[in-house]
Length: 170
Ligand code: SF4
Ligand code: SF4
Image 1 (cartoon, helix red, strand yellow):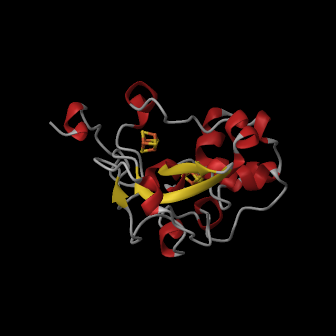
Image 2 (spheres, protein in one colour; image 1 turned 30 degrees about the horizontal axis):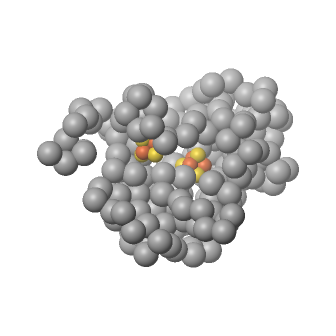
């Protein structure tokens, strides 16, 4: 039995756009007014641009973090969303919550486009971020997500060093 068949895959939302239904909250541009530590759970979740790049596997070589183009087996390579989001920590032991500690202690485990890292380092959200455009698709259209890129599922892979990538947006 392959690893992926062990878990029930959750139903995905009809559209990633559903995340942005609270337009009033978005119009307030909360991310320009609040520190990360003061954000509500809803605001925190909205900050994620949906790129999926944090769900690529990384390896550490001589103290340096290298991204690979192997993706978590639960990452949908089209919409870049987690297929088991509500149960991810139960089912994937090395799935890391993106919280303040992760951003500050392990910044190289996130891509340099990650909205959390940008805001925590006093940088603005990029023009393609869904909170700026109002459209979940804009991260994909800008070529900033994993969609339409050469990635492979991690299932069965052991030689991760042969999958190292140097995408400019990592
Ligand atoms: S890298 Fe950051 S912005 Fe992109 S999916 Fe992960 S948490 Fe969200
Ligand atoms: S289980 Fe974790 S690493 Fe895997 S796709 Fe979901 S959020 Fe990403």
